[in-house]
Length: 463
Image 1 (cartoon, helix red, strand yellow):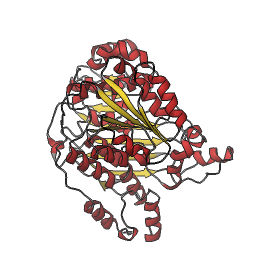
Image 2 (image 1 turned 90 degrees about the horizontal axis):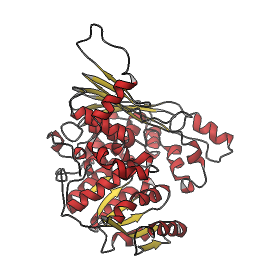
Image 3 (image 1 turned 120 degrees about the vertical axis):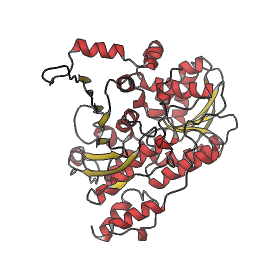
């Protein structure tokens, strides 16, 4: 690419490295050099980090749109059991505060303190003395600054996905968590879905043998939501598709896959290469609806390949433009078994067969494996979580249950800051690779080498 075009493409990624434009050129080696230059020293000290137990976790919530209201409902049982209490709410829209207050009246006597009216009201919330945990459910651009500010004010942080979409912000989050010794978890709910937990439990029990390859995705037709004037306020999500091109939503597919492959717990991502298809579906839909924003840079389908340090491969896909059934793919391949999601299917290999099979397990055999290897976490919470099926089939409740109970008991969280920034870093690196004709991009090690210690996964505990 010509220098001017290349710099323009980088600007289109929201200046994702926050570097002066003059530092970038058409030279691929210079691109790699600049990625190296912005590295920040880290210690890996938040691996398996635990803090003192908090009997009742006092929560402040920033952002009460669609996602914030859902997670508020997921706290109802925990609130009734005195495991947590919502003590502060913040949103630009007063009516959303009122909706949240109405919900909270059903499970707690004292109403929270509210912050509303201006863009900086959230800063006042993070300074409220009695808050233990700040829950962030705002548009993407606020995730990193709010997380950093909250940690600097002594609060643990649980932030919606993605927790960052610039490499510089990934380093900033890591360093801030280490300096402040505050939990900073990206709350990736798909890690808590019953299918993904079942597959993970089979992997842990040796059913799959050694894992060689996995696939994840976010294939979700969001055209109606993104073009709506109200669903994403001021169409904030649509605006990312106007100037950027890559995989903007990595974590739903990548989170569970990372657990399967021991990422951060014995292996890590090494490098990636990414390409995007041409864009047609979103612009054609926008045109048919006479939408004013009808020129988009993001291709309909982005495919990103990731190689791990220990030789495993991951295919990660992203498409929110195309009319198609929802899928996260959820495929994992091992030396003894293969699973493919949407719909869930399982293949078990066997050297005892005269001819290797070419069919998925029968419904009866599949059900046998499903029952035998159901994750113990799901077994324990099945009765309770069934009350919260509106939370993406129950996984939202399990996610919030695990977060709050770990804080109650003073245990390390299921996911740490390194997980969140690593999965999020794939976004800007995919954009860089797309802009460089799919050349490989090195993936930073935010753990300072601590990923190489094979540790037991916190998400396998029963609490």
